[in-house]
Amino acid sequence: MTNLSSRIDHTLLSPTASETDIRKVCEEAWIHQFKAVCVAPTYVAYTKEMLEFCPVNIEIATVIGFPLGYSTTETKVFEAASALRDGATELDVVMNISQFKSMAYLSVRDELRKLADLAHAEDAILKVIIETAYLDSFELYTACEICAESNADFVKTSTGFGPSGAELETVKKMRNILPAHVQIKASGGIRTYEQALAFTEVGADRIGTSAGVSIVTGA
Image (cartoon, rainbow, N blue to C red; front, side):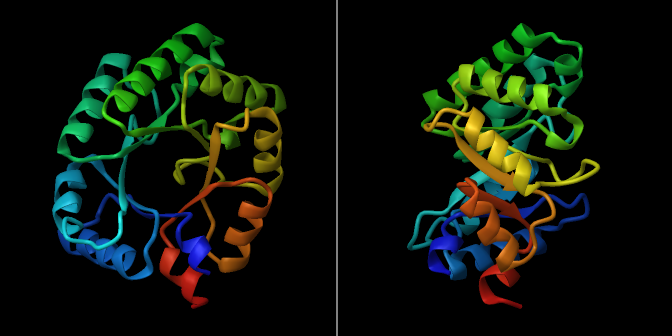
């Protein structure tokens, strides 16, 4: 159970989340020693303040170009730089799915590479959300290849705002496609211990969920 806690990105991205809600998420992460908290960019600085004296290292993740991914590259870079300045240590960026569907693969790769370079210059991690619910098998393969070529640290299944979330078979395929050094974050619809464990068994290195507490306590 402790090992699973260290794989969980405890997430709160509700549009109605308040500072009180964010503080509660930080307290839960502290108690259960989750790997990271994932919050909206507007709460990154506040989250850093809440976790300042935590005795364990909890990463601060935020989202970029969320949830649709079709912001301009300049907008995403500015958003990422602001988040890093505020204290983010992990960036979960939504791939430009619109450009990807237009087969503008070089543009997608170049954007992700810029974001990876920016993150790595600040010793931060870049996770790329490819929104697997929108991709067929060929597109999944291509998206994973682009992420690897872009020097992304993780490929993430879903925003949680798409038509469906993570699926075990998809994560299996991703693990077979991606090189070993590129990790996988499964997110979207994972709410029980059994689900979380199943995803780690097929190759997920992180679990993104708003149900972290109930997962590790069996509630």
